[in-house]
Every structure is written in structure tokens, then in C-alpha cells.
Image (cartoon, rainbow, N blue to C red; front, side):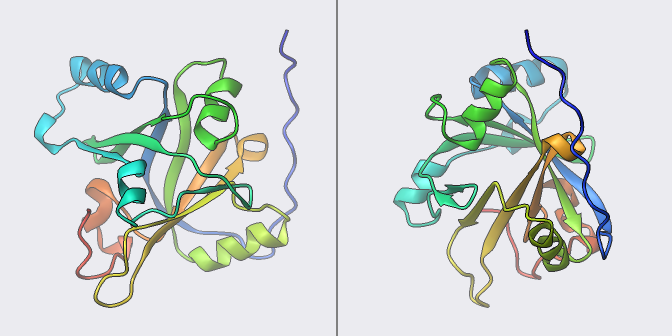
Length: 197
């Protein structure tokens, strides 16, 4: 029988973070296509606007660094799809390797093998300040990734994930860009020429 865990209390941050908005909900699953079909069976989703990718393909093209896990190199790959729903980006992620040892398989195992919300992505008012706060609290990124090659201005898309399940009940993604329908919001702060790849 699983024991209910107590919430781990965080120390009060010296500088509290401001969030402009939540722009993505990400769901981990063992069956991306099956879960996507269920969403399409229930909601009016424009199939032509669904984005599907695999990080292995990006890795082979030199557009993904292969991943890490709690600060250690950890090569793992996922396939994922994204679509807009009610002004929110919904991302469905399936790990290619279902064995323990990567963020998505471990989440599924921890969740009793069931699909579930693995992380939410937020646009921070001060992303670097939040990363410093996490470091000051001794919380290392659960995962960080570099996606794509630098654009003509040297900008590179990256994202940091902080495992705050025991403290906040959620994993937070702090990306360098906002994706989905909120990407066009002026508060997104995306580079002028940014286009989703």
C-alpha cells in the first residue's frame, strides 16, 4: 500500500517570483496516439494544426542535445504532439524507452503506470532570477534541454524543468520562449522573428 507523503516545505524565497501566465499543460503517457485520439474524440481539435515531433529525429539532425536528468547526462528520447485547446497549449509526451531512468518513464511509474499531467509551462517575469532562487534553495533542474540551432541573432531555444512535485504538486517548465496560442501575447517576450519549428 502506498503511503501518503507529507508536503516538503520550501523556505521563503528572498525574491518571490512573478508569473505572467501558464501557457502549457503537458501529459505523460505510454501511448501518445491513443491519448491524442481520445482528445480528438471528445474535443473539437483541428487535426491539421496538431504538431508531432520526435526528439530522436531532432537529435539526429543536431537540433537536440540528448537530455540530462538531475544534472547528469542521460540520453533519452520522446515523441510528442501539441495542439491548442481553449487558449492553452496541450502537449502529450510518450517516452520511447519505457524503462526507469528518464523523466517521463519515471513519472509514469510513479503515477502507477497511468497517464497524467507531468508538467506545466509558465512564463516568468524574471526567468534568470527564478533559476537563481531554485539554485539558492538547492533545487537543481530535473531536466534541461537545448532545442534547435541558433537563429540569425544567436538565440537558442532552451527549457529548464524543476521537479517540485513534493513541494508544489507539479513539475514546472521554464522555457526561453512561449509556445502555442499564447506565443503571440506581448507578455510572451518571444524574439521578434521567432517561429515554432
